[in-house]
Image (cartoon, rainbow, N blue to C red):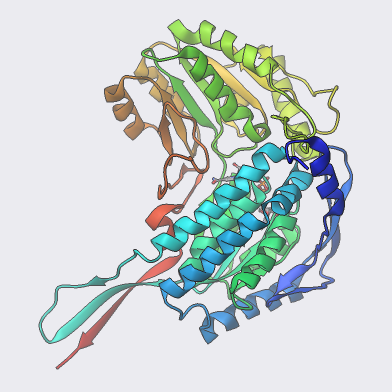
Length: 500
Ligand code: NAD
């Protein structure tokens, strides 16, 4: 059957065999833990799966299994070349199972299948990129006296705890654990309670591809239970987290209270899009800006939700954006033509609705959307644009995580830069201009890891490989992507030999 026709995906979904069990030491295991929790389909409220929330015994078992595997060396002591060969098999497995993985993400958090499927392909590309790069890393022989030999080495941390969010479940899990594995670490992954199933399947596929037992364990569970236990664990050497800034703050405390584990924090954002005078095609820019913040229903860490526009283009750009927002095709995530699915949960829907209401009741003008999508039901919210809201208002300062943005005019590039940086977050930024001298000046001064010019920031821009980014301010710290993203999963070590 043609995969673009809706019944195909519903039929595939009804045939899915869902295994919610934890993956510990190379196999699926039944656990009792704290009890169970349900993952809910935000399109129709149906229970997708009932999962165990791993408790102290399971977290200990997973960490112990990872430690044992690390010490025993069946992965950590293999050459980068051998590890990369296994990772290439994993990339093939992701592609061979892309429909199943995309469906699991779509069912659990509502991402349209038209986005979920390419997302798995991007994840497979990340694995291939890591497998290639790990063979290009070199260690350093230092200048020293003839009687000595001195080496600067990079060694794996050991056991890495990974905690991931729900907005791109499989993609973020891959982007996090594959560099860690490539550098020889063992990993214990706790996926989001809203969307754990693709991460559990990832563990099955990794094991089948040749990752030895214990090197990757996946323990489902609630953040405040399973996540907390992992973050406080005394035998986890490094904690790599992607999620909200609030949780990031808590994890810093857990690291301090336990064993001062190394931390990598990829947290929230409220990224600016700065539209300058010298533009090309205004229609194309309007299209790209809208896509940039409504894609995945706005549940994108780098979404450009503070739209700052030079005064002369403010009204014409806004009109073009409103036309495009009103034309967005909301629908069933399993319909391949759907552009906009539901928000991932009722909690998320409530947050988005209340933030728009707060802006409206303080005098802002909602120029598009601004309400639940009653026709769609479920957790759908109409794509929204809000004007005349002060930049200091929480609507412009806090991460909302929905298909909603604010738009404001500015009178000079310097004022635009001031507004862009007048925010606690520093995750990403986008500039729109053909004045590349100005763009270069501003790109260096604006806060943000990825800064894109004439293209919206995406977690993995399709036109570049090997990019390394590091968030600023309360968006976190620690590199992701490229060579720096591999080195983040190692420590520096110096070894000196006295030869005579
Ligand atoms: P969240 O912080 O609520 O949860 C993220 C993960 O942390 C989940 O697995 C959750 O179970 C766990 N967790 C929650 N409380 C915990 C605790 N006390 N101890 C240990 N673990 C705990 O975030 P979310 O709602 O799942 O995801 C959305 C957030 O993720 C947004 O803020 C978004 O910007 C951010 N995000 C950032 C990036 C990035 O690269 N910077 C990428 C994707 C998402």
